[in-house]
Every structure is written in structure tokens, then in C-alpha cells.
Length: 292
Length: 258
Image (cartoon, rainbow over the protein chains, first blue to last red):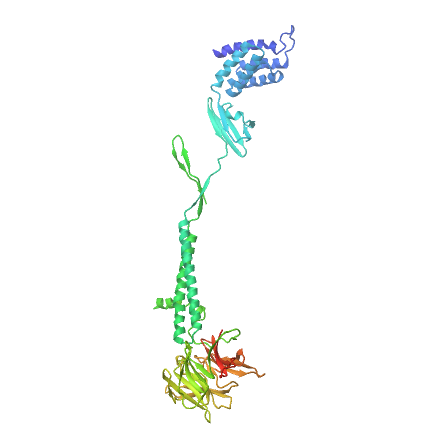
């Protein structure tokens, strides 16, 4: 029923072309190219050949960009093709142009269709960093437009730098695409080996102390050994060096070896991403990420 | 057994690393270039034990025991004749001395207590004896000048019965009296003059008591008499001319420390 009304309106719109086309001439020997294309488009539209009709209306609108009837018919043919966003765009232009030329009837019809389509046009929101060059179906999208982009139902390609996403929208869909770079990670350094390394330092330090004691004792023994002619005395100091000095050296070496082992085997310092709370529609928790 | 041996082998490290072998070694021969020196006592002859606690000296023809820690002197009786040389065993329990009789005669005495000496102990044949080696290193050895006017030195070793037997061949010696042996018998020290007539203290070493002594090494130049090495050759005792002109004695015993 609505289509019938619309067709009637469009017929009248076609008859109203004198506003934009030279129909008022007393003799109409040949229609202009715009009118001819418009009329062909109308014929095709009525025949249900919407795509061909759209093509003819495009030829007409290129010749006469301000013709409200042509704008209106472009909206119609695209609507019939299911290109809601495209149709909505043409209806808005038609509405605007009709308002300018005070063609109330045209304006009303365009407005009515625009209102109807606006409710079901698929929309897209693209979140991207300021200044990012977002491409939608091969055409750049301004920062201003990213908040709400009306698109035809179907498959679309969004590109940002190397990132390329393909999405499919149906009538009435509203989808948000997040192309923002991930926030910089916050890392903290966790040293799980600090205690073990501390033990390593203590062990190694103890070993060094034993070495120093060994060296001191042995040098004293050597000094005493060298200062006496008495065999029993220098044999005593020889034993001090042999058993005392060597024992201390062995113990010190073992302690140093233990220290080195503990140090080498101690867990390394770890860079861990700061724990962030995660709250979602169906989850609450924390997220931790780390790296070595 | 193996574990015990391994442990002992493991523990026998630091002594070997620093050359503390426990074996008797000849003294490393090095000059007393800038030694600390200390006047001990005025003397004309002297000999010191290896602990450097006891000395026997002769001053003005009279023999004394001297305790070196406090330099206290005790008169000792070595017979009616004045000693012409003194050579104390390292342990301080025996003394060789030459008496100024004709012919010059080597005598021996054994110490029985403080200032108590038993005379006429058995001695090797000869005139002047140097300090002998210590018993701890095996049969005691001593170098003896055979005749007072000759340069021949003979080494003796005491046997298990206390008799002195010659060992090795006699050798010529250009120094004063007889060379003193260090306690291990591997180094001898003596005073002598070089080819230019300059006096000095010389030492010569050998690797073991059955080997000949090596070339003499000048420890210290100067008019030092009757030198003796102690404390693994870290100390040198010798008589030097007495700088105190007021003194009646000609020389003073000086200790040199490296």
C-alpha cells in the first residue's frame, strides 16, 4: 500500500520536474539527458529492475545534481535493493533539497522514508586513536564520523595500517570496532631469588673469611716454621699449616662453591605485568602477564 | 682405608703450597744487607744454643754462661787454661773448646746444670771445632780444624757409643778457627778474607750431610769474627770490634736480624 502511494508520489514527482527540468517549454521536442535518464529509470523501477533503475537515476543526477525527484528515486531504488544506508543518504538529500526549493510534498515523503530507514539502518562505531587513518570499504573515515557510521547491510572491510578486519552487518545491527592500540603495559620487577641470593652472598662471604683465615694461619705457620731450627717446632707448625690451614681452605672452598651454586640456581628477576582487575559481564578477577 | 688416605691427601695442601715440607733444608743464602743489630754482650769468644737463650762466652780469658734474656752472667769452670775457641752444641748441653796449651788441644765438656760443666768429654781429634749439628737431625756432625797452623778441615760424626768418627774427605778451609754448622748440619758459616784481604762472613750449603758444601756466599762484609747462624739463618751472631774505646775488651757480641 505504501509502495503504491509512493509510486503515485513519484509519478507526480516526475511531473514536477519542471522545477529542475525544462518540461515547461511549450514544445517539448526532445527531453534533456537528465530527464531522459530519469524516465528510463522510472520505467525500469516500475519493471522491478532496481539496480538498472539506480544506474539510470545516477546518470540523471550527475546531469542535474539538484533534482529532488531524482534524489527521491535514488532513495527508492536503493531501498528496494536493500541498501538502507545508501537509500537513507539519498532521502536526506532529497529532503534537504525539497526544503530548499519549498517542495513540501517532496520533503514530507523524503522525511517519512528517512525516518523509517533511520531506525533500521546498520551502524558502525570505530574506536581508533586520534589521527589514525581508518579506511572503510576503501574510503577514509574522518575522526568525526567514526562515532556512528551508517552502512548498508552486508560485508564491510575496515583497515587501519596493517590491521584489516572484515565484518558483516544485518539490518538494524549496531557494532563497535575497537582499533585502539593496547595500553602500554605496566611492569613490576619481582625478584623471587633475593633470599637465595642473600644466602649465596653469606655462604660466599663465609668462604672468603675461611680462606682469609686459612691464609693467615698458614702464613703464621710458615713464619714460625721458618724461624726455628727445632725439628719438633717446625714440624708442629707444618702440621698447623697442613691440617689447620688446609682444613680452613677446604671448608672455605666448599662454602664458596655453595655460594656460587646458590647464586647461579637462584630464580632470576622477573618482569611481571602489573596485576589489573578484570570486570566483565560474566567475569570478575585479575589478570597477570609476565615476561623474563 | 682409601677414604682416610684421601682425606689425608686432601688435607695435606697448604703446607706443600708454601714449601713447609717438614724436611731439613739448607738455609737460603742471602745477604744481611740492612739488618737490625743489637749489642748482646762484650766478649772475646762466644757460642750460642739454638734457642738463643744460652751463650757461653770468654772474656779476658775467663768463661761465663750468659742467659741472653736478661744478659746475666755466671762464671764457669772449664779448667785451668783459657779457652781459645768455644762451640756449644745446639741443645746447649755440650761444649767444644780449645785450650791454649802446647800443642793446642780440643776439649769437651758436658753441662750438668746451671754453670756446672763436666770436663773431659770425648772429642774428635783436632784443634778447633765449630758448633756441631743437633741430635734431632741424626748423628751429630762437627767440622774440626786438624792443626792450628793448617787449613785442613775434617768432618766427624758421633757414633752410637759416643765416639767420633771421620766422615768424608778432609777439605781445605781458608777461614778462621773452624766453620760453625747450623743445627741441621746443612750450612756452614765462618769468617774469612777474600782475595783482596777484605774480611767478611761467608756461608756454604749442601743438600744433605753426605754431600760436599757448595760455593761460599758472602753474607756480610766486615771484620766480624766467629759468626754463628741461628733461627733458620734469620739471625747472625758475630763478634765485632768494640767501638767503646774506654772498654777493656776488644770486641762485642752483636746480633744481626734480617
